[in-house]
Length: 395
Image (cartoon, rainbow, N blue to C red; front, side, top):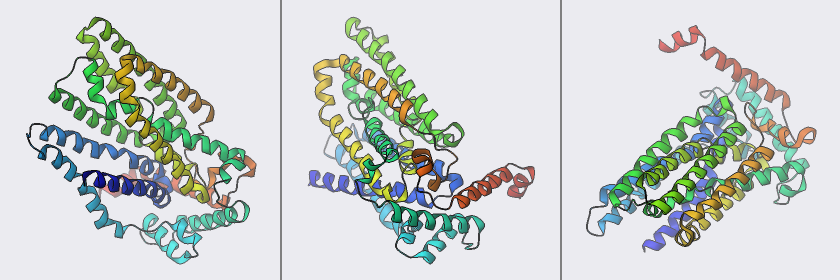
């Protein structure tokens, strides 16, 4: 029964995980798109904090409730989803693609203009979405073959596959799933100590990942990916060196340095690969390929997770600290991929991002609308910073 429950839990999570980022991307206001789409995936750490400290609390229960309580707690998010999913609006792009234009108009008005269907931004977004969907339907289609037919789509495909793979197979699987094995190899074998290290790590992860969401537009996607990957590589090199020294000398200071490097590694990991996995993946795709593209990305996530589950423990047991060298080389490869293939997309509406990939041949509708939306949202942002706006808000 426990195995069956885990199966259905994983099945449901996969469906929700595929649909949620699509809906967030299409409902959020253009001015706030980067923050909301990025923060989506970082909320994973909220659950990991609960899991880490719940298992710490039940560690000393000397019966089956030590594992039953953490398992039961997993039902809470599903109950909340069942209660509140009925209040979530449908995607306006989906509604327009199905001919439900008025319903889509009302959804956009509700989420972007407090219900005002005559709002200028809402009217412009409606026109842009309709133009783009019509162009995409008439000129391209939405089959899987589209991912390899054009240079722009091939680049999108490479980025999507690398996002899924790199997000889970950059060494983070060692600390996420087999931290106890890593700690055992550096002389930290006490269960309480291991659980505290893990619990504190999850808290730090959550703080950094959520904080990063608010600088995505300010710093830029590509820059954050480069800083994150380079930092992970440097941290992993030091991690590997310290683990090797501990294996030779047994000096506990070297083992403690490994713990410090695990924290530093995750500090850099959460600058990009946690939140922007979904945010960046969703925004580089045109509407007609968005669902399929994210499906491919999550497929690579699952492939990497499968590898983490079944290969990492065997490799750690056989090679011990030398296995870390593999990840050092792999992270260097990741840095090259990010540098040569990842594109900057900040300050760009969804319907305009196609130009970054396809150039003059991009299938884009409502170019004038996109420009007007940019101007209006920029004016709103500038107004928010004026003394009058601050005073008005305080009143």
